[in-house]
Image (cartoon, rainbow, N blue to C red; front, side, top):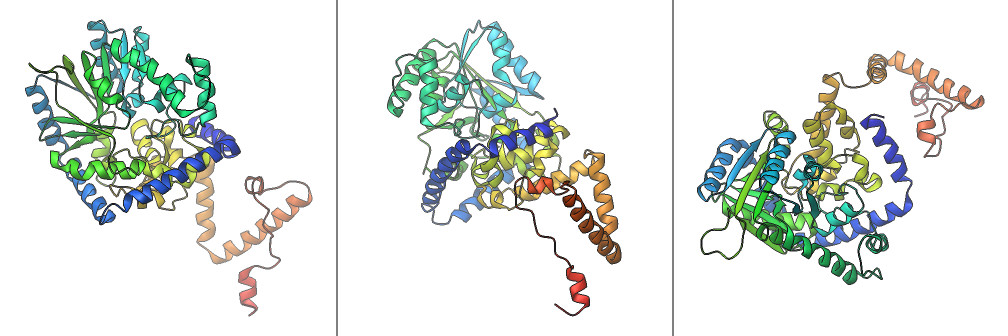
Length: 461
């Protein structure tokens, strides 16, 4: 089954799962209230969005120079920078580093890029134990699932389901009370923090003029991952760079508000290199892996390069009516929802062109994007690209050619409309429903006896 057919299968399954839809609706409603409250803290939310969009636009337009500036700063403080053209190069660098240093246990802070490059299986193949330390990521890791959402990986699970999981996987869990569940996870994760030789994190931003990695978390696990192990590896996309340290004054609060509704995330951390003389904590080695993996090709596309502005807040997922119905796992991609539907065909090829059609084009994603990416128009651009690349099924291409031929003539349109209406009535009479794709989920429309065109000719309208 190809990716498009699998998407349709999963969509039908999840759309009919009322329990799943209830959980998602409740979580989305909670988010909507928090985000709306968060936006009121800004004197002018749209002006803040404009400012963040301008910062990211400047960064993308000067990506090469800013990345080199960032690298020079990191190297000057004793860090290492590796430029990975693709997922394989990134995995190989980190795996070799782990093997050379005798790493047996790795703790990971939340990172979507490590999901993108499939890092965990590569490290496990070497015999390393890899522990996700973000609570949501830890929950889905225990379930052997990928993250459900860019920001909230376990959004699809209820407290009862998490309680059942913890009773099965962890010791000392007797109820579904949040405090007890968190305490059980903390006991397990603390042991991992203090025994890990390598900590891996993502990066929310790479600050070029300071050579610093900016990380935002709400649980403190990011700081434990980056300070306790003797090796810290940052895995990040090249598009995360920003020009100046002062830009964080805009980006950090806007990211927090768009992502969770908070005024600022609980832990906002800047890291620039390994431990230096006189410092009592921090890693002995500091490595930054800059992942391209198709981003340069997108950067070369002047029309669509603004997609690289994305700061991974997840707001477009929460606003999308399609995502709310089918959920995150249906997409079968690292990045879900509108941003995933726009980005994935560029990163993973035409096998994922179908995602650009999984949209109502309502524009809600564009209206909530904190860096003002024109998401629904880029979905249209992707559809156009798919057609121009001759990636659509032959039956679809033939159908649109016939539709165009019919629409180019009023008389052809009228005659074929009558023929179609007649065919629908005949099919219904003999038990064949040509409208089944619609009537399987909706009431059948009543076909009028006379068309609007005929009524108009007779002067009845």
